[in-house]
Structure formats: C-alpha cells, structure tokens
Image 1: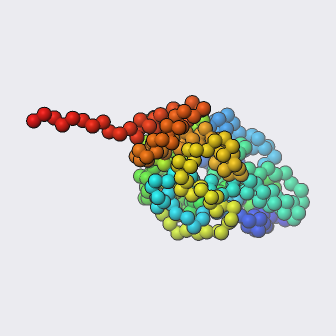
Image 2: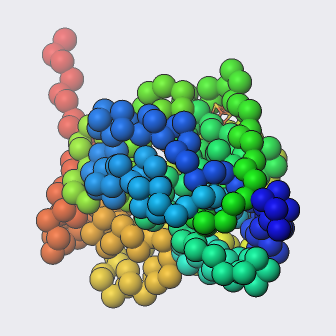
Length: 353
Ligand code: SF4
Ligand code: SF4
C-alpha cells in the first residue's frame, strides 16, 4: 500500500479498535518540543524526573527509536454524564474526571495493542512501540502535530467535538504513513482557563508551570505541599479539572457511554472523612485498578488533610486529630496544618468605653 492508503487504513482500524480520534505525524520532533528544554530550565517540570531525566530523548523520539518513521496518535473520549467540579456540592472532595473509572493506561494500552495486531494483519510485520503517558514520547506534541487537537491556553488539546476530555496514546512505527496537518488555534481571545486557575499555574497563555498546578501538587509531588500553595489546592484530592470545566469547548458534552470510565463507587465528589479513614489495606482495596493508586495512601491522605483544612468546617476536627497521630509524618504534618487552619477564631474582649 502507498503511504496515503496505508495511513487511511491505519486510522480506520484505530476507530474500529475503539478509539474516537486518530491522526498521523512524521516521527520528527514537532516544533513545540523546541520549547521543552526551556520549560525544564525554568523549573516548570518540578520533581517530575521522568520528564527531566530523559529530556534529550523526549525532545526527539528518534533518539530512542532510530527506526521510527511515523507516529499514529489516537484519542479516546472519557467524559461521562456527571457534573463538573464547578457544579458539584462544595463540601465534598474532588478527584479528576479522568481517574473516576478504570486506569486509562490499561484501557488505552489494550486497544493500542489490538490496533497494532490488526494493522500487522493487513500491512505485514512492522516495528512498533505503544505509549500511553510513559516512555520517552511527549504524547501531546505528536498528537497536536497529527491534528488530534489544537493546543489550548490551558496546555490541553482541544477538539471541536470532544473538547479536551480525551486520552491520548501513540503507536510509534517504522511504517511510512502520510502525515496529517495540525489544527488551527481554537482559543481566540478567550482567557477563561487562565482566569479560573486557583494557583496561578498558567502564567501565560499555553504555558503550564507544573510546580504550581494542583495536578502536580496532589499526584506527582511526593513530599510536603508548600504551605503557600495549600489554600489554592481547595478540595481537590487527586488532580484538578477546573481549567477544563470552564473551557467553552467542553460545554457541549459528548458521551461515549464507555463503562470503563463511569465513576467507581465513592469517587465522584468523595466524602473527605471516609477517605481520611482509609488504612493501607483499605486504600489498596478501594483503588485497585484505578489511576488514584499512583498517589499512594500517604499522598492521598496528605491531600485529604489539606482539603479538610480548606473546608472551613470545624466539625472535621476530630478526624483531623486522628490524622495528626497517623504513622506517616507527612500525613501528620498536613493534618496539624489543617487543624490550625480550622482553629476557632480567638474571642477578643470588647474595648473599654
Ligand atoms: S489543572 Fe487546575 S491548577 Fe492545573 S492549570 Fe488547570 S486549573 Fe490550574
Ligand atoms: S478556556 Fe478558553 S483559553 Fe482556555 S483552553 Fe478553553 S478556549 Fe482556550
């Protein structure tokens, strides 16, 4: 097959394998990756060693795969008909929408492998590697180059039909596939995400300072959350959806009725006190096969303590007092901070007339 016919066939097979979007980019470094080194040099990647340690490989995937010629990017919509964080009861915690159902890494990888198998059945054997958020590939840059979505000012990819609620995966191949064109800008003069970000993690359009982003603070950061950042974390206990919830491209909701992404019991607007009571066994049982297990119990309970402290509800003091005695010093310290934050205002004596 010629590169154009093969590309069309590969994209059709991607949709048959259960993806919603498919596009192709040449396996050369997309222009955005030129900014990657500067982004890391500014410290915006924080402690994400998996980004910084392989910076050269991430700038150009041909460093890792000299045989690569094309990157087939796929998207899988994960929105479900449930409220946005901006609409949900304020007293509950919040877990990012992408983490409500089954771990998307497993769902995406299974479909990518199915896709590769079907393509090999038609095109004959070829070299390939599948990536979902791992390995030395900066998925979004290749997906943007393949026209899967346009870069949003919140650094997500935007698609006219699916908004930004889609996972991205990649099949790096040695097949010669005709490349697609990137999409034109979709943000225009909108600044809704920059205005809504509670921690100033979007210092300029299209620039994410991950070290200030709640997703980083509640998932990637393994140690203490800086006290100056805790108030901004609000009630988010795993990730943050705010800059996507306010995006006008996510107003027209499309659901794929994908059972794997429906919220597991207790993950949509979770009860903070219930999370605070999880021991190691309870955490493992609750989050088996879920992306939330990435935070580990100590990370999740650190975040829960911060959210309880931000609740303004002194009724949470007893559970925080228990957390302040937790075996893990990280949890203890955040619980003590939350208790100070919930401390009743000291009565001040009226001034003498
Ligand atoms: S995910 Fe939350 S903290 Fe991060 S940039 Fe978006 S609104 Fe800001
Ligand atoms: S909220 Fe507005 S500026 Fe931000 S990504 Fe969406 S369209 Fe772009």
